[in-house]
Length: 482
Image 1 (cartoon, rainbow, N blue to C red):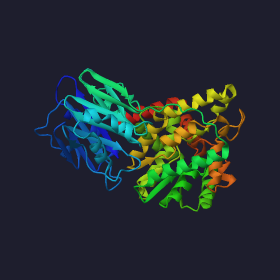
Image 2: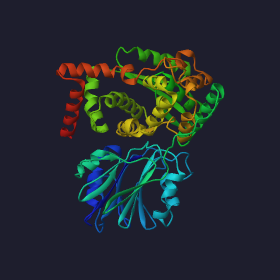
Image 3: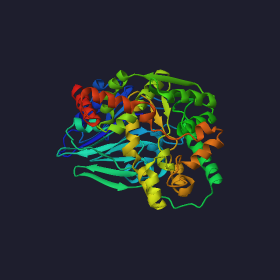
């Protein structure tokens, strides 16, 4: 885990200084090792300022910051036959060698010909960049779980794990790299090609009980893949449906599981989480925060998520705290339930779509799933990476998503006034031994359950501004101070 950066200098000048500048902006994502590469040379060091670039010069360059999560992780970029590679993320299931070695074996001696096989063959959250003579080839996983951005100006075309690295080198507009796609980056800019996009599955006629059984099997398989290379993991835990299923599945994988619950002091959901943890018979760490804690966290979170989006900030703050606690407790892998609401109709707004037509609801859910990378995944990865914690999402699995989106609407929402929704997932929870207090607990959005929304509104009122204005000002100040 860590960060990647790559640049093509359109004027034929040396791109290495550009990449080094980008790595400095991304050093919060990885501090265990740093490296740069051209198609023929690579240099790594313990710090960015120790990297020796003597005798290295190329209009194409890669960079990588390493956050050592697993023993198999090693410094990058690495050299292959006539190319250099920087890889960020994970491949599930593991292939018995490091993920970088699995990619290199696939590329072989002709990376430009074989690069399509990476996206076609491998699942998991990942991005990569390959430096060849006069071209950079970059790619991203099918669901876009690992963050990657791109942009260009008159001099530079570049990609990076976060937008701030592109802004640093004078690229004002940084866009999210399309999932499941490859990009060839040359002196003429970007040329994209979709390789493996997530298409809406056809509807599958199925009854509730067999659907819940099949869903449980797929979720357990997804969890096993995500825990196959570790002996312990933390869980972002609220005691609600999604996080309780994640916790129960992790427990079945016989790894050490640590539940983590955060919220403002006095929130009733903290006590509910304690009760749910006792039912699951799993250890729970509860941390209660104050209004001052919210005020201190907000600038850091806004700097990480890189936009003044109120809702994203409200969701990111509790996850930021959770990842921080996980790291302090010695857990480098954090499991969470993101993706479940989009797959199973958790949001109340789906009721309006259902009332219009079940196909409208189905299309809405599919759209939400394929845009999760922009709305959720990038945000969550960026706040967790700050604490050197790797976020893994068992619901964000290609097989789970394909099966779930193909289910009949009635298995998710019973009517346009359904107060619970996510019916098939609730039956899955019951099959996993969850009591009604968990399986049939109504959804409460994290920003309200933790009290963060109310805290931010209070802070904005003290400042005499709207919440939106307050968040925008905090973002400006966060970047000015850095």
